Length: 276
Image (cartoon, rainbow, N blue to C red; front, side):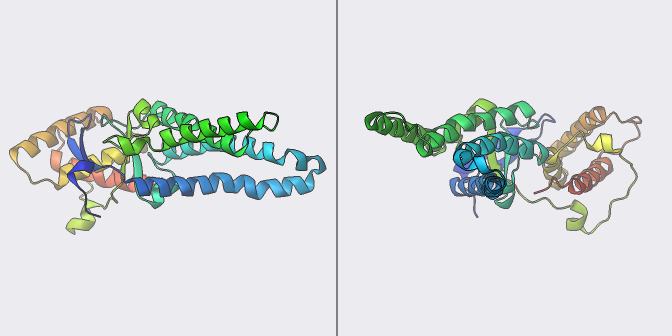
């Protein structure tokens, strides 16, 4: 899909490298959410009939149990996957989407929790009111409650359509974007050259960075070696050496070190199943 200028954004990473990202389109986000919801609601739909059969008194409280199960699945589901999969859920992975920090930094647990807890208020609370309205209130009040829930749901659901960054309220609070996640390829696969393997990295040194930083490094290594690019590589190298606590910093060649760290980090993330 060709991207337009209206969906392109530029962020400056903590290493000082500007990167271009593309905002996810509304259809892809909706499709990703539907896949995630199918998983979340599918689990209790499968589990409840078995529980009702095995427990005689459970038939009368099946509806309440369904609500309780889905409630306790929703937030942990989204939060756990976005933390574990670097801003992705199963639905986002299918549609190649990712949640990123709008300031260019790593996606923090606080931001992930904020955007997903807010979804309860945006979507699930009004949806629950629409599906399971109290039966002990008058029909007039019941209609009013349903109308309020419908308006509430519409306002929050349509919010991304009415701001240029396509933000949910949760994204506004958390400081996040939902963007298209480009597939990442190893540079040696593209260039036909195997890495030299002059440097060895420990798992702890590779755990310092994630997929977002990997993509930043890839873009930097793809750039032609102009004076500005070489200066940027030296600056990025210095930051990485400090962050991973590299011992012999004076004997490091910037080009080969960055290339090998990129290859090692890619293999490390692939092994942990973090690449979409």
